[in-house]
Length: 222
Image (cartoon, rainbow, N blue to C red):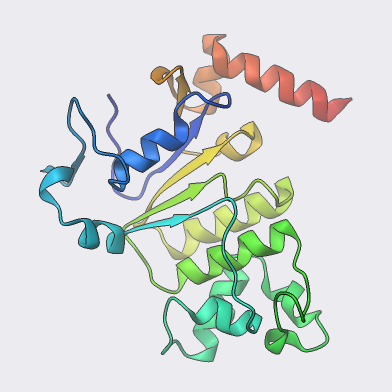
């Protein structure tokens, strides 16, 4: 069991197949929990209309779908009435604005087959900007920062902290450098929570998290 306070950032880490995505799918009722309870503001998730739930819980996937339209249109899909400055602000928070203005056609650049092919990181940042147009109480990054470099990753999350202080953020990640700045880190193994705490607390615990940290920092160092 775990409890999350409003405005907290929670990182969920674990090896492939540990159950990270299953947990998120339960939170948005793509899967129904067979045991126990999931509560939002004290209300059982099964008593919350699915449409209402998904309107208030935003999820950014690892492989977002982009349309063969302009970059501007791809961001604006979440809010067709959004003014230009709101689009630019969302793109800036997602660390994408500078990339876009560097394109020959800027925000009018066509994405897809007949246009510019965006990198994996740029696609993920378009999806982040798109979601930020419609501020939600809960935001889930389902490994959706995996294709951006560590520096950009930190830049995006610090910008989120500044602009969306009251949004509760869940970050599913394999990257410890992404998890380490979260208010709380949950480590999952074989479908169970095996550790929970801050980055330093988990390093001192000398368990699964510490093992992952050692592996990743040694690889990066080499």
